[in-house]
Image 1 (cartoon, one colour):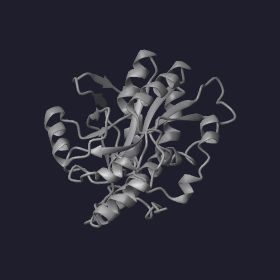
Image 2: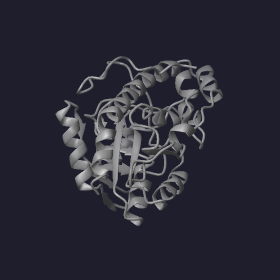
Image 3: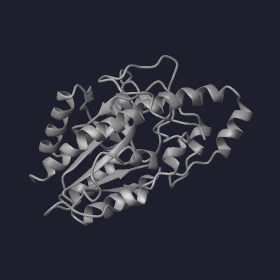
Length: 285
């Protein structure tokens, strides 16, 4: 498998790598063996609970996003719910996560860039989620303020503008530009809207932490999109078939993999720095 291992400590404000990038909204098939073998089930379960506190429930689309949480919190203080690359499943999972009334819900993972100024690895902690129908879901203000303040105090470069929720992957540069003009959102993902709606339906605090994977100028090749099934599992056949049909596709995938590495490094760093703070804040609710 192609490896997306971290490329060293992530800078406070990630700088772009010229000529390199990865489709992360696609949650690309370029996982390392380390991620493929990760025991997500144990992380999701945990073993103990904080006194008088139910866990933080974190909704991720794909396993490699969940793996970024591995060392951030002690077992039992959080649960991970995986939805796969499927917006309907994201709604089901988010409702399941909210029904048990945790202290908080979090949408965590990658996002596709809509704002042309945002580079791969840019950390997003949006103040609100907007839908295609212009419905707005504001994240919990106290939680958002505490986490963004902590991020900036640690020298992290954070964007707090609104995020767009979509039911499918946005693969074309033209479509990204259209959505940016129409909605004014800086990025897009397939899980955060579902998390927001579930949280508000059950009156549970919620927050979103995302990192830009594929930037606004990056097209996501069809072969890359087909490489991830609805459950988030990788299928290599579409990749190999695409490369045989168009050898230039290999270069696109390599550039996409560099972008994905940036996003993954940003998520790991954010998890380690900001999730413990989230538990402290949720303990005051």
